[in-house]
Length: 415
Image 1 (cartoon, helix red, strand yellow):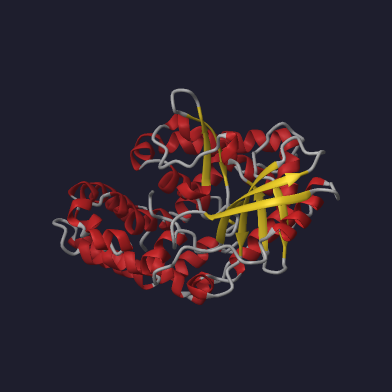
Image 2 (cartoon, helix red, strand yellow; image 1 turned 45 degrees about the vertical axis):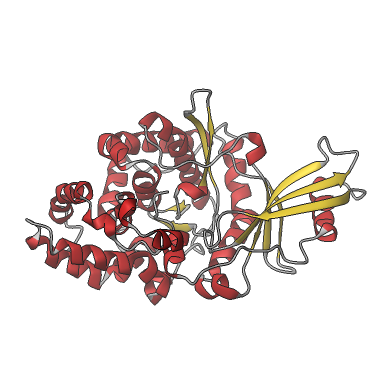
């Protein structure tokens, strides 16, 4: 996948993580109690539980994930087999030691209060976004979220989206999510608790995600012919990238035109899709709400442009995607019955320009991982994830970046 996620960057530097084993309390009795409540059947009996970890060791660091198959005795159920995904807040080891404790709490809050509001207002006005059904959320014996497993219904993961047409479903979902939050914010719903101080605190996670890779890019830039004049602007950007990111993610940054609730962590592993008989994406949805943040829509839109679609799709259809998003954002607000000021395309373009440093970071820190020559990486390095920055040596990547860097400078994104 396009390695842009918090999980991947941390997995490269964290100690080896062994395959997770389900906790002892995730047993018949616990799931029976959960399902009796969620299904409204006090006579439901759990016969067996089969649990397997989701993903490779170290792949998901913000949660411990398990795919669970529960066999029930319950005459009221159409299907006695329940397929679930269990997310558990890690309490020890590498996972707990490296992650910001607020991430799991943010997702708990989303499923508890805010997602139902967003989903309801959109569904009531025929602009639905598909979200997984939350079967359970609770604090004991560990903070836990249990969701329906969407895989049996044909939802699958995918790598980067490689066409404008296939990008429309996820762009529609993002626009509706943003529009519903904007509407609710004007109708006595306060989203300002969805903020992060990771950037203000200069949390070590930032060094894994941005600092190390931006420094490696700057070191490589010094060796690229014809780029000598750009070294100093990138050095300035590296020196205060924490502050720049804080201004992007803060909802109170001076000059901000408007805020929406951002998903905040769009990448391939947080998306699921449905495909037609020809294998093309026809419906998309997003998962994992641990990084939600009330701030500029530029956050999710740059993730869309840089982490969801292939960079060649962005090159050919950037303005098409932005226009498509804004049209759906506007149409959704009108459908909901919003009578206030609707941000214009100019407002959106101002937000994208003012927060364009995030675009720079995505391309300098993360895009390089799309240009690896894996034949040059020792098998043991590949297996451990210690792949270094060989993508910076790619002539194709260098050519692409050399075409983009002057624009970054001329737009003032590195000032």
